[in-house]
Length: 463
Ligand code: SF4
Image (cartoon, rainbow, N blue to C red; front, side, top):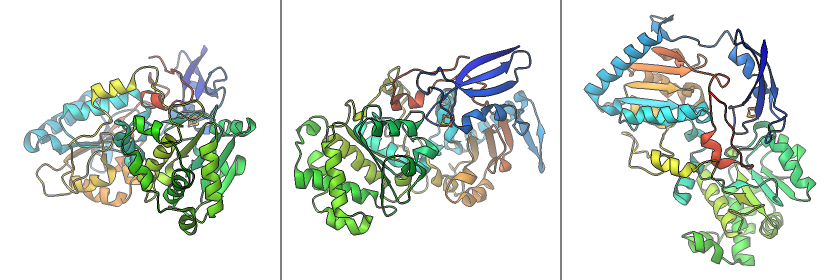
């Protein structure tokens, strides 16, 4: 007999609702469909969510613990895997101390409530600071700016797209990839609805993206110059036109210093750098400032450029001095269905700490060292260097900058354990392969995205 189960996709922040046909006897998955009754995603989902059933039953999946024997892998029991790995970790910690163990967490970690808790709990229980994360590749600018400005890396005001009048989107292509660090499904429809209500959408991007082809006005900008555009907008708003900074000063430190930074950055000075005419910069700045509810938003294209942190700091500061943070039609600061910040405080997540890498003196962002520091933390002559590495839900050899350096460093490891659904370029070097659950197999709750909801709701899958 077939039953229909309700669940939601955990591949990206959109968390689209899905219905899944499950054969009660064999537990095999049949058709996966968008959940038309989901009050937030309303029947929207993309091909990745629809493919989750195929992944669940894929013969290529890892289904058993495996141990490297020579140049191949042999199936072993969970008991053997846990005992052997545990004994090796114990031995290394005894001889070289807690820093000898490291953990890399890939992107899917942050879409699994249990993995977030277990990963941080695992590394903390071992008293090692060596937690590395994929978000250091494309989001650390946002996480660090939020830590410094708001006190926790998970605080990111999200645009109230259902009521906004002016929305400027920089370095993001929601038609292809939804929106990063914003939880809303069907971003294109939400952007188009802004225009349908008489609002304005501006897509700032070096190329006319798939999004710019479908919604709003496209403003072409030279790559890596978004911070200059933002600085000139601040100049127009605060220095040319003037703005009452009182409300911003009531809630923030350093507002005068922030505004003073833009004194010399006139649109005329910035125009040759950005490739945007000074008159267009002025018009954008004034339209943004004068709209009854507006937001600046930036994502991966700006994050990964040379001024990602400065740009995000400018976005936050501009949204603040124009009175758009924490207001309907501007940017919302959702707390989620429960007090995420309190939980983060209890767990010690998302703040600044004293941990530093052995090499390079890198600090942590959102509780994790940057992945680019990992090869040097393994391959050095310090007795405390990493000798056992766990890789959970990730493939850093493939996805980090200079993955070849990590492959070379792997030769210095005494233990490499990969926890994943599939084999990949990183697990090819592992001593043990441990199979992970896919999203149709586990109970879940999108804890790490609860503060990013454009529409407040609680969504979960039962055990
Ligand atoms: S948009 Fe994101 S959450 Fe929705 S189905 Fe696609 S991958 Fe999954």
